[in-house]
Image (cartoon, rainbow, N blue to C red; front, side, top):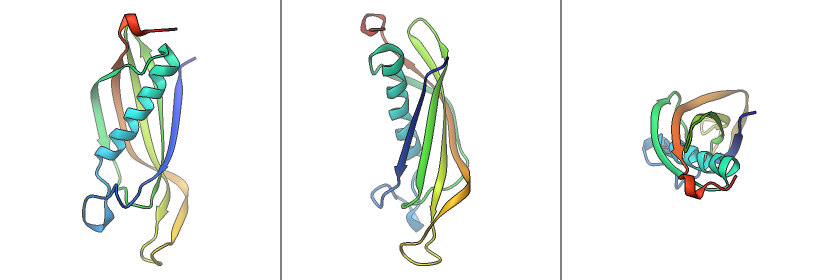
Length: 128
């Protein structure tokens, strides 16, 4: 059974960097970094070291106030490396066209980003 991790977070005004309160795609990578740390701890009892992203796709915009649900899973375990897949979905979207505090729960989550990455847990750091 593969290890899985889940995070749900609201994008804040501090996360927005571009006009129209657009959040940079790098924020999704930060979330994926937290997921890969969670997965490494589950698998090996150590945070490990994120080695590389092999593929990243930014698929839809994210704005401050949106809620993002991201998940990651280990798909391949090597001697010290763990290959992981990540997906981030917008599950609540802000509605500035209605008023400053309006938002909608989305009937269907919107895939905003997906990626594949590898973490390494040095052999002498593994505890499981």
